[in-house]
Image (tube, rainbow, N blue to C red; front, side, top):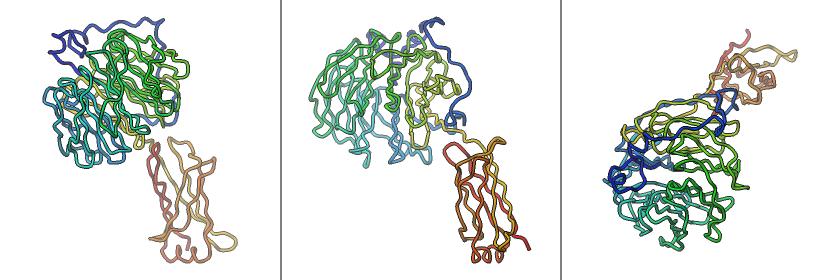
Length: 435
């Protein structure tokens, strides 16, 4: 989520300098849970692959706007630009000038607004997503880094890395309404809208500040790993996930008890983290490995380690399409990671009932095993005949009416069709009507 900047290294500020990346700590076996490849839920078992690579200028942090089918990638240099990517075509459609040295990006889908922190000039740029123009510039604290939005309350949280605070912004009035002291060198921030809680990673002291959004106060400080960087929340599991850049781990924090319940080893110099609350899949960018760890967060099972571009930093996930986007800063690309759906096979047959009506049967399988509870539709020509759910043996059966039987006999064939799901690929089969 945050990027190497030589000028920050010289100034003794945070940032992934090559020296810091080369000095990542070693995690002892006793300190971390073993992350073993193994059986995973159906959502994870489908596998994940890099399906596209998009050229963009020095992309670091990224954010998605599912309703618009848009991805925002911050040009993590002094140039001050944000690339707007069309998720349907995987192309950059425009770039938006923002402030100096932009560092993070977040989307407010309720108000159609995008927020970008500008580390170099202590501001936040407010972008109208409909017009791709900056409509406001908000002064905040020193060296703003991370940003998160609670779209329910219209509140924006900005970590100020240079003065150890968080600025709370009213999205409607575009102004700072509170400043909250936190730990040393705050970087990442994430919001759990369901509990009105914000989580802030403090890179300099190895902690996470837990903020009660109703009172704008820190209610707990959780010790995590070395140099905590990014944070993501899965409200469905009451868990916050923190990448520890300095010791190659991810800390899982129980949101109810504010305690670390697991330490998960990942790749070298983990930076960004994103979670799909629907599937429970966690994505972690490993900056020095040029990889992304895809993790089944519930079982803490490694689904796959994917090679992406050079120096991956930010990651964001569209839970609707189960697609993740990774900003590869040094590679000048955005990697698109999608679920590889399991192939299916469909067979179809027709028999004649004692009443002389046609009985249509289709059998649906995946990897040789029956698929139950899936919708299979039968058609003849352009005419829809029926839609049936498969049984526990993967069989869908439909008895036609006399009129439908006549229509099918006139056309000569019927087609069975399974449209597929987020997990399974579509398939179809046909059969000839008996003479």
